[in-house]
Length: 138
Image 1 (tube, helix red, strand yellow):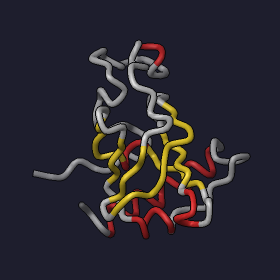
Image 2 (tube, one colour):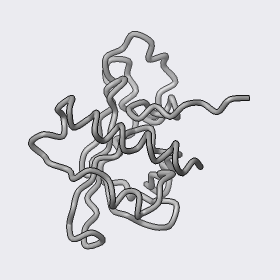
Image 3 (cartoon, helix red, strand yellow):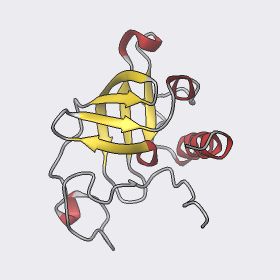
């Protein structure tokens, strides 16, 4: 059986925001009523420990992401994590678990609040994480 290819901007858990609705044809989570859990403020855990907390989250179908404030861990740097890096969400503990290491996240493209939503930046980040899954599968 072939493994499912990594798709950077799509949630692995279809109900990550608490919905049981079918998102087919929807433009965003709000459009199909799945804004049940706002991930802003949740802690983020890499495979090898805590990396920060979520400052911003997008639930747009096909382009979902998290902006994570790493605090002092990498000198206050923020990082953009595609939704596809999220392995699971623990709503009770208010934690999001990603399946990349701290070093892989630290080495990701530099986050820039002015350009992070551009197609060019999204492609750069998507290519980086797609490469990390190809080179270091979990």
